[in-house]
Image (tube, rainbow, N blue to C red; front, side, top):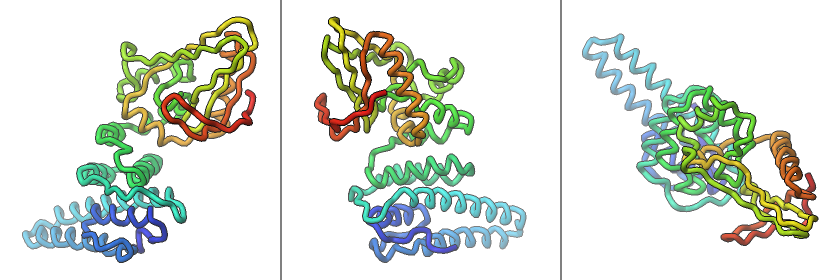
Length: 296
């Protein structure tokens, strides 16, 4: 097996530091850890010692079972690490805060059993995100992800275009009632009694701006003589829900379809024009955005 990580950015150096923990290595400095092959060899040596001991006791069948099991675990771990590696860019700066030991324990114990390539991609994003900014993904989120089936993950992907402000699922999405219940059973959305209510008050002859996602601002222009209340119906996401939905990549087409649907519903309530702007910064209720927006 070749080098798992080639060190050429601060982010990849920290990735190598983190995976040495998983592969049985000991931290030896960032640059010396460029070739993680040594750590895989250490883990393999431990496995071989275990197998040799079993064989010495005359239990060849059990030894072969252990060898196959440990080999599978290593393949799964390496596959997730390779997915994580693809989420770092040249010269990327990351937090120098170390990833929590308990978090690493839980994460690497879980990914030993991940065989589906789509789920490996998700776990790779989790690892990359946690390395870039520790405490991005809670232990509860790791356990929630661990228990997801491929079918449940598909429902999450289907729901992802309908997330508002990063913390709510638009109720009038294309999800069926059964699919919505599954998301609740998975612990991604909260019960109705813990719902989240948005009230966007658009004054007469004015434009109201609010964040739509982590990257976009929506502008609602009211040309009428009356104030218009916009109250999107949403389900509040749990902590695990907020963190997991951030892992999903939504196509531009799906985003546009959702924004077009929203704009149509807002215009039915009296809004004259709907614009989408790129968010520049957000501090509390104060937001700044690019002046030139796109009308939808």
